[in-house]
Length: 379
Image 1 (spheres, rainbow, N blue to C red):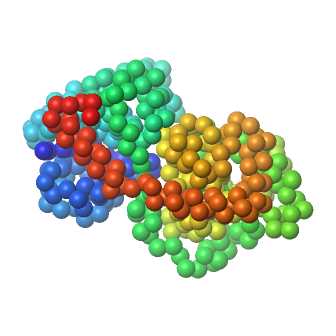
Image 2 (cartoon, one colour):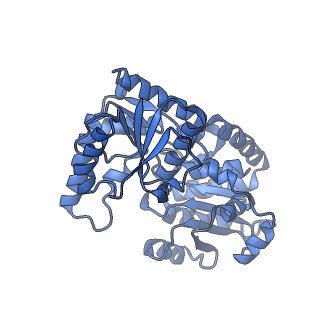
Image 3 (tube, one colour):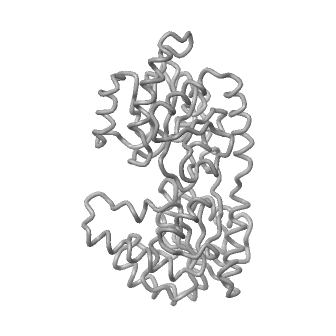
């Protein structure tokens, strides 16, 4: 079996985590399949050392480009590929092989890129629908994503296999600094804090989180431990997100909410481990890796009762209605001040982290490859 996997987004968050861990697990456990990795040497750097049954299919065009649609099918045919695995929506317009796709969520295709014209967005939707209809098998990272994929694009549910994500091995492999106090000092963090880490996008619901923090902060103003509580947000720069700046001003928590931007993984691990709680009241997630990362560091998690999050995190997180600021605020107070709740969430979080495994997920993906190669697109 000769399988081509597109790795051109191996350095991204989310999709990149999936690519890196699935390919690395294949490298450890499968010496029979021949894998052709579509991308460049800079993408290979994101992966572990690979055995001889992995070859780079050098490809410089960007995903979804006109050149990819026209030229990639020629290369697949030339190299005798049996299965093309696209880890996101945008397969070439013509695929001369069996096609397997992984869908993480629908924001990639339903949310137009900044500056995209209606014509460009219509083209993106057209090619996504075409790829989904053409695919022999589709993998979704949660049952929630599976249902939404079926509802929005009319994909038969029997064509979709749920294969969960897991904790990024590279993340835990990078040693956490032993001088955690000094790391916090360098970032001028001296008070207790609650933490958000992830992308700054509308569906992350950060404006409501800021408002809810302000309510909880007012309720805790006389608390002996949390009177000086801060909210730290780590991820993209917030410079272009004036709505979040306005939320801070409107809620009168200037100086209490800090945007730290991007930090390296070892530093992020310090913040995870030192946070009093991790807050992730997202409106929409295909899976939701940051809460899992926080749980791995023994930090109690508050997250949303929407989309895939109740399915993925079950009773290991405190679930709140993400559209109700006061319910989020009550959840923040509860997770900080109720010791029994905190201890239960920490214990269940550790147990949940062990439930998800890239070894198991990679085995499921290989089963899909075999079924598709055998001509069975519903197994």
